[in-house]
Length: 259
Image (tube, rainbow, N blue to C red):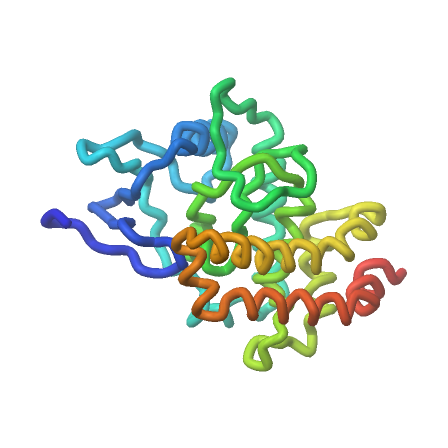
């Protein structure tokens, strides 16, 4: 690591990510040009809640603008306890989904496609979660870690975000008695219609279980860092959460579909 580089901890795949002044440098991959095209488009259409790509440095790392503030997971998650703050997350996701509608990926675009997505109506983020939400002042909220972006659907992105931001967790430390109320706040703020709500309900558990299945498959092949996460018990967490969500599907449906 060179002088003036500050490692940026957090997340599960942050090796090699450093801050240099007002920029972030991170390793590239075959998907980097497509992700940069996506981020450039978002800024061109006025969506500022994402880093802006600045090219590649002399070490072959991508260069992105640094998003000031703090990642809210786990120590600052209480910031989202008030309903208006949770609603703001949903509205921010809606703004992203609206902004990405006009994006046309480069003809040679390559994406990571880590988990088979449900649908392909947009280029989705695929990891809209508290560990990727940076909150600065009241005007500076942003999602980071876009390297997993790729074809997906709005509901696929939303189902994943709901798991993390409500949260829909089997862990007694994170379970919420008001989970159904928070789910309704989130979906109302995003603006799903009735048909979309009906489609979303079974997707909540499917999207969560897809994370367990992905880690299981990657661990079986010895692919890092996923094999390490599986060994640490992350697969069990995702499986338990999926079962928790499935058992309460009627509760989620009532929250979203009751008049």
